[in-house]
Amino acid sequence: MMSLASHRRARLAAHPELLRSIRRGVEKEGLRVDAQGKLALTPHPASLGAALTHPGITTDYSEALLELITVPHGSAQAMLDELTDIHRFVALRNPAEVIWNQSMPAQLPAEDQIPVAWYGSSNSGMLKHVYRLGLAWRYGKIMQCIAGVHYNFSLPDATWDLLQDGPTARDRRDAGYMALIRNFMRHAWLLMYLFGASPALSHSFLRGVGQEAGLQRLSPDTYCLPWATSLRMSDLGYKSPVQSELQLCYNDLDTFTARIHTAVTTPWPPYEAIGTHRDGQRIQLNTNILQIENEYYSPIRPKQATARCERPNTTLRQRGIQYVEVRCMDIDPWAPAGISLDTARFLDVFLLHCALEDSPLFPAPGHCQESQANFSLVAREGRRPGLLLQRDNCISSLRDWAQETLEQMAPTAELLDTYSGDGQHLASLKRQSAKILDPNATPSGRLLAELKERGQEFHHYTLAQSTAHWDTLRAQPLAADTLQRLDRLAAVSLAKQAELEASDVVSFEEYVAEFEAALS
Image (tube, rainbow, N blue to C red; front, top):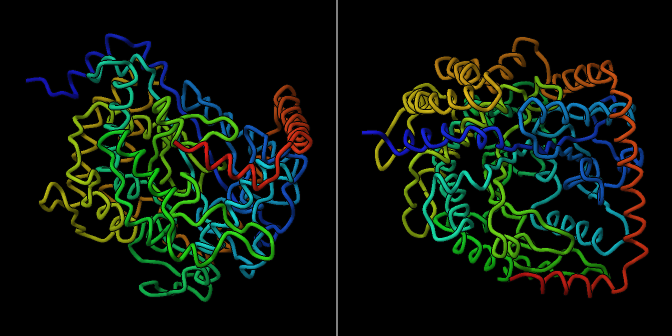
């Protein structure tokens, strides 16, 4: 009897135009550092445009934390080409600094010297700035300097008519993306194993986490967990005790958004103790569990595009899910743009596989504790020999489950090879298989081995690697029309920020109140 996934693949094969209409994009973060690898304390370069209004070059938490964003593309190659072009533009227009090509940060200054991102004096710019001030009060600045790669993925709406049941096209689309997310959560540990690339860190980061428990000192300034794949995604990286208690529901969008709504409207006593103002200035947007929806840390999010002053939760409720954002990918230290073409192709297969496979609902309250435990375990100990994971109330070895999953993904890779216009998905899948057989072939295994073989500190190793990538990017000049377009985008963004600053007609406090009222 044909499985549900096989039946769905057959239906998609009869509509190859849908496979060619898959869209993917990237948001890649990276710290600006100086020639010694120290965190840049300079303002966001005006030559790159305005972080508030530029569609492709902005900042995340810190003024030094660049975020480079592509538009959605019809192929992984086109996406990577644009991302690489943006990196080349940054290298050309900001030649005195380098982008740190690692998820765990460079050597950091004292916490009070880490600059919070500034977006100008407009109300919308101040909203972003104050939100980040709130993050500093809640979690500290050091944790916010961690960087990663976010992979955005969408299927054409007509796909869900073939894959899901429901009374309306939107119902089918929302149910389909939530099913994809549940399967992603079940198997996200595999991404940690295959692509986690942050098993080590510099001693300066430990000031932010306040502990060395469990870490091994590899060299005077370098600490690691010997079997870790991603310290960034472990309890040493992004973490929040209060968020761990939220128990979001991934069974349906209505319940998911209802619980997010509760989190962004419910005060939390420790945050109330901080308050919203100090010396007459706002230091956080509110004292709720989450200031805004995006404060919630998760490996994947359902997303809908938002306009100025729109709330993500409101747009999800009103317009449904437009795409998913994968947030757990570490920066690839060996890829000049932070992600390789092989990785992007694998993610396309993985995410389409998650959409095609049967996806039972999670038990109440709507999240899977097993999946969360597996993810955390693999982030900290994924390369440990004989590692066992929880699977449907039983125990399975990581190696056996990983091999089985890749075998199950192969027909989806073949489907994409046949109909998407890119014939390299199965080859990419096979290259990942080697990592399952040899943990030392994983990025985390390679990085630790190279640190030991070269006798280098994590800082010096990453600086040399980042500088070499920057030199490579500079040596590949941009096409004249591309350079002209990116210069124009930078100039237009500066003008747009100036317009916003000149057009505000309400006070910032009134603007914050309007923003809070936009939540529904």
